[in-house]
Length: 304
Image (tube, rainbow, N blue to C red; front, side, top):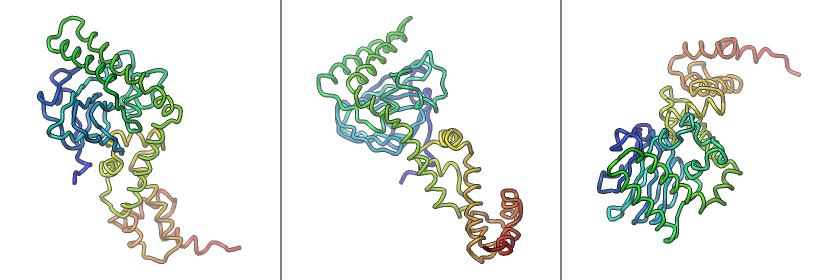
């Protein structure tokens, strides 16, 4: 079983022969066979050999004549069969979105009206881009033109490659315009974030008693990178991971103190603190009094 907390993240220099745009088939470099992320955009085109793609927390069909659109920092893997074939395109954000200055972790929030070229990437976890033979033949022509231009770069070659890349994405957007608009209108990307946050909260709840719980492990459980989870928590909750965990631990501690007679040391362990003195110090910081005093104050409170 793959340890998702140790998933590697690659940059263009590690997986591409050029820093801006790189196109290849499986003969040029073997495909990665385990989950990974990269800092650049990627499109994979299946030329033969039915398989699936794992992207984020989703599993999508990836048969022949299908394109996969992968955002930077998105956890993914496509287990290509040995007898299959594919073309892969890597390209940097600077090459692709030359007029847009945007944190790559915020790309999924860019409006479909402002950057329609991002639509297939934003909604890949919700949609399969499977083309019929006629539409796929047009894609193959664009790929061959890209490969021919990329073999020997000259002044203007980058502009031509970017134009061909935008044509490819534009054709896919045109073919799938109805589901892409529907996904945009329903804010499917926000639904995906809520699902990811739900997986994080489930992980925290299940491991609350573990003093060794880390951001890295929680991110892996939610199929996110640690950087993206940190970014997402700040955006959606305004808190860091450690702040969120501490708040959940303090809430659980108050529940135990109110509803049980367990020793403070046992409650500390149940809430993920190996050291009772440290637990008492953090409890006092969060609640204005140490846990023993908190418990006594409840028993001394008048009843009605």
